[in-house]
Length: 482
Ligand SMILES: Cc1cc2nc3c(=O)[nH]c(=O)nc-3n(C[C@H](O)[C@H](O)[C@H](O)COP(=O)(O)OP(=O)(O)OC[C@H]3O[C@@H](n4cnc5c(N)ncnc54)[C@H](O)[C@@H]3O)c2cc1C
Image (cartoon, rainbow, N blue to C red):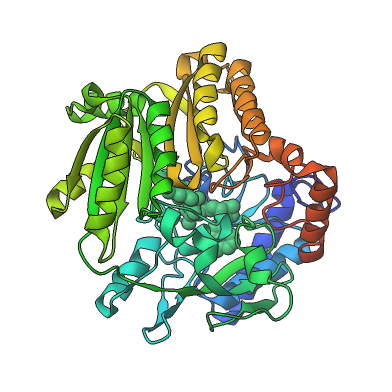
């Protein structure tokens, strides 16, 4: 078995894939399946990559757009029979290369799994299919006074299956927890094609090992999530308060974010945006944010005590020397939140490639982390922008490499990887992790062993072998070696 997982004995990965797809088409025809199978290069091209910018290269792969759980089971059975890799795909919004195509693989798209099967308002629980766009869950629950709390900034383009596979975080996770905290039960198709149901519909439940938690964050390497039972929370009562606090530097803003927790208030949002981002937004939108500072904290409080809590936070922010604005007005709140949205959206086109790092450190090491990012940027001569879910200690340190510095194959210059390596080493030294929410995918697998250590790394690979003995589910992602 090659690292890519495709079987060698039956021929090249492309030839094996061709035979597997022909067999799959026949099986699906017999079963009257409505699944769509794509092999034409123009048709499969939109499924080749995610939003990480990682390019799969010139690889041959097929796409199956499944309509039913039975379609997913058929794909897994045929893949097992022929030794073909299967890569589950949701919205393709990942930043780690997790859904990127590899040679001879079937991309299994869950885009048609958009059903919200039930919302049980009394229990605060809903059952959804894996391809539901994240934001649609709260839209459906809102008339019942409920919402799905985890809110990645990509909620309008990512799917719940992808969020589960990456254990996505988001803007209000500082108060309401990440994806794992809201997942009660899962329907998962294993590599063998068997369907299992993990977890429970009750809020509590501890029978046996917690396989639900294991599947959350497993990046499509242990099974294909086809359905989920999720916890819903009440829409907070009252009017939220939104605070924008501009500081002269990003590390001053970071220090203030840490100080906020001394008030005993847990904000429902606490985000940091650095001066480079603010200047880029100004250039793009004609705004003047950068003139107000080089570090912006966006803070929100919610619930009936929102006003009192906001005031406690404002006192700390003002003492820390920031230019503070607070609002309860919906339109002004939206304008403030737009700054965050614009930061993670595609901005004015720039001739550059971004390498997204997704570090997380304990709160008391945040200021040091931010200062060291700035010195790593200077040492390696690489622009590194900072956007952080700072309340969670999660920093997106994004390396911006001019396209003029890529080599003939479009690869990043060695100093970009050296700078990324220094960032990772610093996060680990400070007691943190190489990824807070985006996952390992392809782009961070070079550092996983360093974080886990040999013993745990091998233990984790044995878990993978137990679920997927032929290494067919998203092979080559998360773990480097077969
Ligand atoms: C503008 C923008 C903002 C973002 N903001 C955030 C943020 O705030 N927080 C955050 O955590 N991330 C964020 N992301 C990253 C990304 O949106 C998340 O990682 C998201 O969870 C990916 O979901 P997806 O459906 O797009 O998954 P994909 O990109 O399709 O896949 C991601 C991984 O999950 C696996 N997978 C997908 N579906 C399944 C399934 N049904 N079963 C098993 N495995 C599956 C894939 O194989 C792959 O390994 C952002 C991305 C963008 C572009």
